[in-house]
Length: 151
Image 1 (cartoon, rainbow, N blue to C red):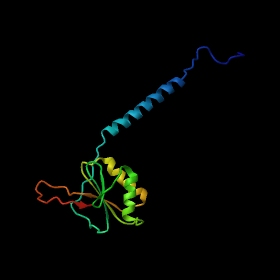
Image 2: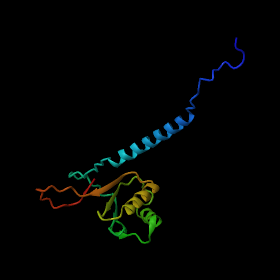
Image 3: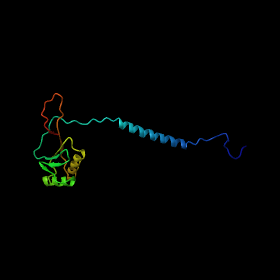
């Protein structure tokens, strides 16, 4: 009868904790790498403007952004720089009528930030009916005059 250690000296243990650490690190690496590869191959289809103009309302507030980033409300240029000047000009033009529809006409060469600034100012003032004016896409055989339509 053997008293004492019931373990034989021939048995050995494999410490798998370090192997698990290495496998988890490799798993995280492969998950992150495949995520980056998927985003690199992502195709984005941008929307096109419809050739059908929507019904324009006569009471719509028209805000124009020119290619240099200057704002115009109707025929009047907004004096001053930044969102505060734009918000003051919008408020002086419409008063408290926040249900009035707004048409944003931005030059195709205008900086995206200028358009976002105008939209942000309108959102902070509480306007919810915003239309962005576009021109219809011309086909190769189309002989349309290219008048702007509001979408």
